[in-house]
Length: 115
Image (cartoon, rainbow, N blue to C red):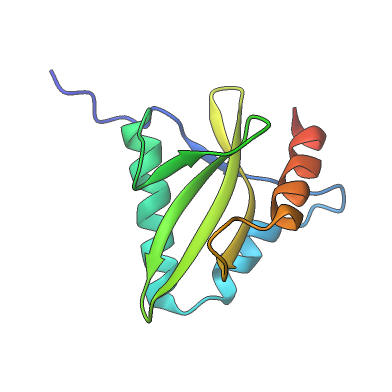
C-alpha cells in the first residue's frame, strides 16, 4: 500500500503579536508565484526526506524550500523542524548566488522562538 499522507506537515511561524510573516509574504506575491511556492512546499511535505533541487540544508538546523519562479527569479522559504512539522520561518526572493546572512539570521531568531 502506498502512503499518500504528509510526512512532514507544514505550519507557519507566528510571532508574539500573532502575525504570520511568511503567509503574509506569500499572499503579496502574484498568483503564479504563490502557486509555484505552494507546490514546492507540498513536495517537501509529502516527499520528506527530499533533497535538491527541491530542498537543501542550511546551517543551524535550518532548511530551505527552493522555488524557481518565472523571469529568472528564485524564491526561498526557510524552515526548521519541530514536533513533527516543518515550521516555515522566513520567505524571500533571492537576488544573490549565496543566501544573505541577514535572511539566515532572521530565520535563526524565529527558530529560537519556536523550539
